[in-house]
Length: 398
Image (tube, rainbow, N blue to C red; front, side):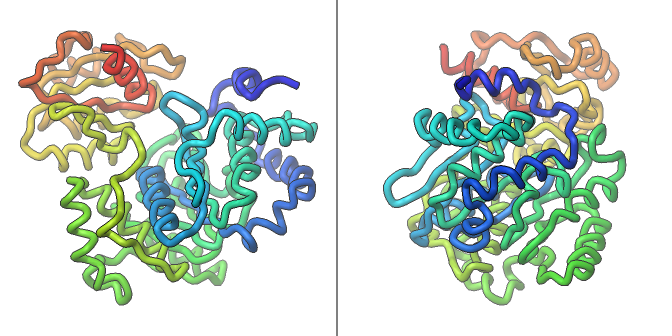
């Protein structure tokens, strides 16, 4: 039997073309063997998170809140920075952290024995591993991938569906308009539906239509000060946010987590809630270095708002399919200079195209050199998970 590492290397690119029927066909084979249909929705509640931005931090906040309420949970997220294990965060009475190599390998051995699992794509296989790993948990916090209704996480019906901010991203797969992208994501809703703050009214309108058509219970975004059950928690939440210097978008994601916990009759204990345990989400690597795995226009907007009038050296690169000009345009008011970081990834934008964009925007640039970071200069590392990974690799080797 091949090891998990060997299988993942063979499966290749995460965003390989997918067959929308394949994951359901495989699930039909493996579910009876593991008893998934008796576990998920009954013994283990499923919380599904769908959106463009904010899925990872929302899911981790939810998992932290579940732990405070004495509930065991597995948080499945993607992608990872360094190790595949990062996608599977376990919180239980006996263990808290990324799953061990042994736990992952055992889950893989159990899954690989079923021949149809060999057909799964990289992300589909990761999803099935999450289902195996979460079998003894009380909650599975399941972060969707790029898609919505066709995503591999849709094999399970969720008891609560959280929709974070939906924006323009992955247009090559999901469509070129916000309506097209929102539709494929929103059609995946099940259980109690919670819609986070949206920039586009069209997204909320679509959400209401689908909630009604599916006869589900749901709620749109409303400020915490007007929430009938959570407004009494506002001061405690704001105190926590101030303590850990959370930017506005992480405060929103924390509030969304409060709304999800409320569905299950639970609350945060903010006085004893630890800091967010998820790397790359507006992470302050040093006093003068902020690192974020954001990679689209909406991600650029929230970082610009967070940094305010501060001028930064932008350590940057991007995947080729991204709207680089639009992303950089949002950051222009805070950019002092762009430092182009070299990243070995087949999806990375060709250097000459990036330079053309920088010249068109009249932005000063040079190649990034980790040894030239100055303590009296401010830096923002941004552009993709691959950019964050490469920067951290170099920085932690200093």
